[in-house]
Image (cartoon, rainbow, N blue to C red; front, side, top):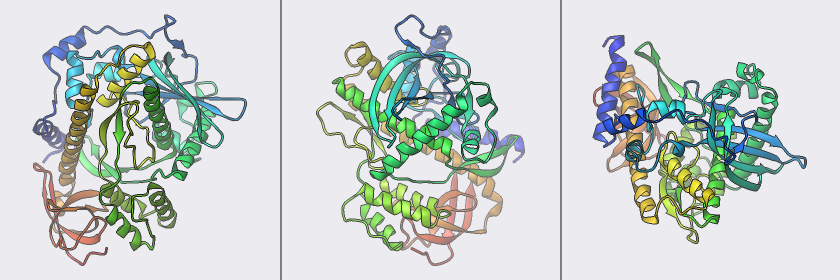
Length: 492
């Protein structure tokens, strides 16, 4: 296959996978016609929203991201506390409930990021321009305000509409290298007065929030996420995305903001769409995995005990910690969306060790966040809820199902990309870890390169977390099949 054909092959496979999973790869003529009628929306400066444009807001995202959903800024208070402001793009301002564009977003529920092509939830003119908190652009936003004490606890919070301006578009890797002392400050920081100090303050607060969450049982997991590296249109390698301080900064602020949002809606007497990770059904296997490292976990699911075990293993063996993390992630099971009505007991998020959690900070990319934004804006206006309980219940099921479909499309295309890389290596042997074991089949992940595949032979006695030696026996680009057989005894 020539270089120009590899990316085109993956794009064709991606579109087919989207269709097979019931996702829409293209916008309807009605949605495109509606897009043409949307004017450039000026930021609100009419007094109905706070004017916060002069604060040193900045975005931190992937290098190539243009669908920017949030900005952050810190304000130091006299008593040692810090006010953190998270500005979330006002997507609802231009994408109205029930519109043709909204119907497309409601159907897919998420942007799908494949190895060769991104299938955006919203048209690019919106998600990367008019509803994006783009570099130097003035935009309407929903601001989530958190006052964090010196110990990392949340003291007070508020939510309101505001007009903001992104003064610096920053990337995770550059900011992380600077924060960790491995590189210079990214160039945009020098162009904004006080931004460097502000980002360092944000980093310090984020670390305190993270420490407080982990003390109360939040799980610190680190899995290996690989993405194809293209040289022109030819795949040269699979690169692993590493966690870093900048990613943690944004992650910790978004978790805190999502908790504030859930509690705000509850306090206003409105229902919310919660993000839930229930207590793991395979806790018995998690106990077995911990026992292999000489650790004892209680008989009933206990996030704090599991968090302590993970923290110990990260310190003891940081190189192999991602493999253990992957095992635990698989055994915890997937998240889902559920409706919470004030007065009901929320199931909570086992992995984050929190009761109140929603998705609210990425409305350009995820439909649940747009739903939550509409609920928030109704609460701010003192209006009835934008969705009924029955609507939310139906949407919770739909969003959970379509998130699963989108994940499968991304994995499907990722496997075809990996097959392109491995097709010339049939017969080679690799070290691997079992990532899935059920009646449907046994799955393993090879360490180098980081590729997932099915164990077709020698799977007897293999369970999630088992380490084994495997041989590549097939790499089918069109079907995305990567098959292995065991060539040695597994090490549990």
